[in-house]
Amino acid sequence: MAKQSIGPRTLLYPHPDLIIGTYDPAGRPDVMAAAWGGICSSRPPAVAVSVQKTRQTYENLIERREFTISIPSVDYVKEADYFGIVSGRDTDKFAATNLTPVKGDLVDAPYVGEFPVVIECRLLQTVEVGMHTQFIGEILDVKVDESVLGLDGKPDIEKVRPFAYDSMRQEYYGFGKVLAKAFSAGKELKK
Image (cartoon, rainbow, N blue to C red; front, side, top):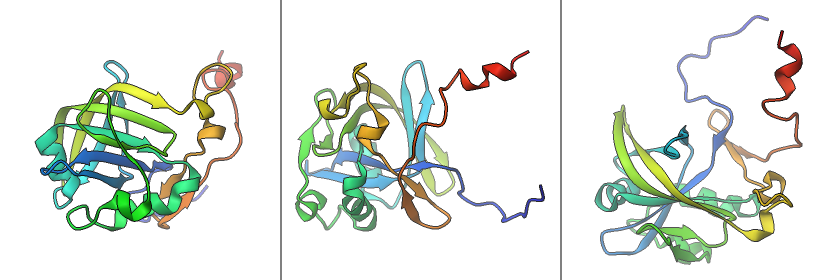
């Protein structure tokens, strides 16, 4: 099982494709794609996203202290990618993609109406990490399109159809079938 060193890299599988929604200083809705993020606390429920200081979203987060995370389905991979390659300083990303900005119910931040899962967050703290600032937000609410709920009332990943980012190859990937039930599959190895 020989391993080859490839050096320190931003490698982690999978990177979620998170669309961060904020309002700019003039109150215009803005979104950006962020792959450096994930759940960071169970109590309180919290998520962390890392943003470079050069981004408009960084300024918006510092000013407003509230944000949303919209999770796109594979149907919107082009739009999500676009959100990461243009700046909100000079581009109305919603107008360019014909997507709908919706004001959050609990936070002063917009989300993407067409995306099936939305997380509303209030900033808890920031952590400086190299060229990024990690914004840790308390999750105040999760909104899910009824069309992607399973019979049990929970989001069904096969209906949500999120995708992930591969930072090494700079490609997006979908998800496959269920492999095993978590907190159950390993029980047979328990002694």
